[in-house]
Each structure stands twice: as C-alpha cells, then as structure tokens.
Length: 475
Image 1: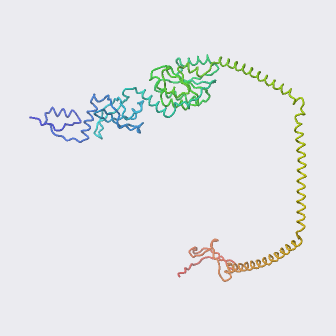
Image 2 (image 1 turned 180 degrees about the horizontal axis):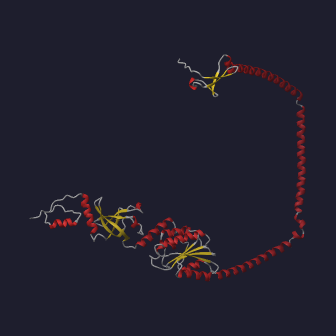
Image 3 (image 1 turned 45 degrees about the vertical axis):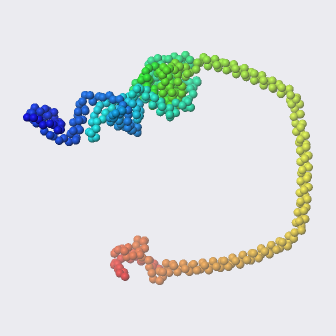
C-alpha cells in the first residue's frame, strides 16, 4: 500500500508512540498542531542539539541600552549580513569587567534557545570579551578615562608628603619581600619612625575589598602621617585589583598623604595615578616617606652653627650702634634736647595771652551794645500788655469750661433716664416675672416638662413652683 505524502510533521510527546505507530505500518495521517505545540517542538530541537548548547560568535553590539546597566540586557549581535537577538542576564553581566558600547566588536559564547512567547530564536550569553583587546585592559582604560574626566588624577588634589613622619601605615601582604624592604629601609634611614602594617590581600577576587577596608581603617585611626600602599611585581591580571574603581576612590578620599608602589617601574596602575606620590619600588617608597636621620642631624648642626654666627654678627653690629649712640652729644649734653621746645613754649604762651585779651575786648564792646539796646526797650509796658492778655484768656477759658460742664451734665441726665427705663426692676413693677429652671432662663414651653421644679422671680421676691400642666399657644 503506497503511503500518502506527509503534508505536516507528526508530533508526539511520547517518542515510543511514534515508533510504535511506524512499526504497525500505519498510514501517515494529517494532524493539525497548535502554534504552541510546534514552537515547543522546535525549542526542544534547539535544546537537545549538541552543536547549539555552546556556540562561539564574533560580531558587533547593536541596539544596546546603556540605561539598563545592572539589569538584564537585551540587544543584538550582527555582522555584515545577519543579526541575532541576544540576552545577557544580570548575573553574567556582573562578571564582565568592561562597559558595553554600541558598535563594539566582541567575542561571545552561549547557548541558542527559542523564546516561545515571541517565536524567535536567541543567544543566551554566558561570557563576553572584547575582540582584539583583553577584557581587563579595556576595563582599565575605561575606568581610567572615567576617573580622569572626574579629575581624580589632577595635580591640584595631591597632598604633600610629611617630611618628618612619626607613624607610617603600610598596606601590603604580611609575607614576602615588600614589607621587609620597607622595614629595612626605614630602620636604616629614619629609625625613630613607627611602622604599622595592615595585612592585606593584594591578589585575587577579594583583594580590592581588602585594600579598601584597610584604607578606611587607617583613616578611622587618624593618627598616621603617611600611608604606603605597595605590592611587588606581577602580571597585569595579578595587579588588576589596584585598578579597581573602588580602590582608586578610597585613595582619593583619604586624608592621609599616600605613596603608591605597585609592580615594577614600567607598570602604571590607577592607584599610582591617584596617589599623592608614586614610587618605582617599595624601597623607593620607604625612601620617599622618610628622610635620612644622620643627614638631618648634620643639617641641624649646620643650621645651629649658622645661627650662632649670625647671632654673633648681629650682636657685634648692635654693640657698635650702641657705642655710637652713647658717644653722641644727646647723652653728653641732654639739656640740648629740649632747648628748642622751651623757646616754642614761650612763643606760644605770648600768643595765647594776646589772643585772650583781643577776645575779651571784642566781647566787652558787644556787651555794652546789648545793654544799650536792652535799656531802650519799654519792658514794663510790654509786661502789662501781656498780663492783660493772660487775664482775658483766663476769663475765656473759665467761661468755656462752664458751658462744656453744663452740656456734659445734661447728657449724663439723659442717659440715666434712658437706663432707668430699661431696668428689669421697672419691668417687674409692671407685673412681669422671670422663670428659671436650674438657674437657666426659660423662654419656651419646649424647655420644660411636667413635674419640673421652677423658680419664678418677681419684683419683691421669688416663688418655687412645680409644673402641673403645660398649655401650648396654638396661635
């Protein structure tokens, strides 16, 4: 029996059913699948294909959204002729040491899967590195550019290293030659300085956190004059913890002047750039941190001798000036100092007497003229006229006050009569009364009930009453 051509692929969830069906020699039949069933079948093909479980692609990043940093990333990888959707989950994104950029050429690895809801295939990225440059080096360059734009490497922010430190903090590994070189150099050059080691992990995943932690410890103690951060030579990967952004920022924010000596002289870490001073080797760092004590003592002796010679020279000069002053005529004939002043005093005294006499003479003339003018004025007549004016004004004032008092008395009488008409006692005298319940005035029958005790106030007394019946005024 000839089989009919299959117009649609058979789909069985259980493969044994499919095999059994073929063994029976059954004729192929048409079976209509749902879109979901077909998509699941294709997805299963992708998942179990050994060639798609781990693929390696090279291409350019396209449609990248930098605002989703720290979250799941969805973008494309493309070449000249094709494009594929990619997914970079946040957990894998945190492992990447460089910042992704639109158009960046990258090498990625991952697995191919089907996004069933959209019906399209995509690449789930496991790892990524730049094409043509190491990931760590690119991360180094990107961090360097970022921090340089912020000004962390500018000379204006660098502090001066203390010339005569009392306490020096050293951040390095407790084992190895670095700390020994520093201790030996400081002991040889400046043995009075105290060295405090902060044991630090300087290589590995936890090294950056260890460095930052110890920098903060040094800052918390706040009693160190200098901080040395040192590490011996190594590969770029071994030294990379000293290029971490958090380490660079911790050094920048430190108040203690910092000397950095990381790797060999040809190595330049971001720690070297941000530190207040860079040393080629740990030994050089120790030499930059402290002076040579014997040289300083020799300098002190030299300065002491110079000071003594300068003091003796100055003393000699002052003695010479003193002798010159002692031999001057001022000390031999001191009275000559004030001869000129005595003459000036005599002249001023004479001028003063002349000025006083002239002033008195002018004032006497003025006084005579004023007396004459005063005698010519008829004071008695003026006084009499003023007295008459005062008497007239007194009479006017008295008359006005009497009229005003009379008017005010009349107003008071009118007000008293009006007040008397408004008095409650007058109203009571006409037969009215005031009804109260528990001290409150009753103005409506709605305020009382049967058997209530009332107080009735009349003009000549009060009555205690009890309500027997209440009549309502229907009008």
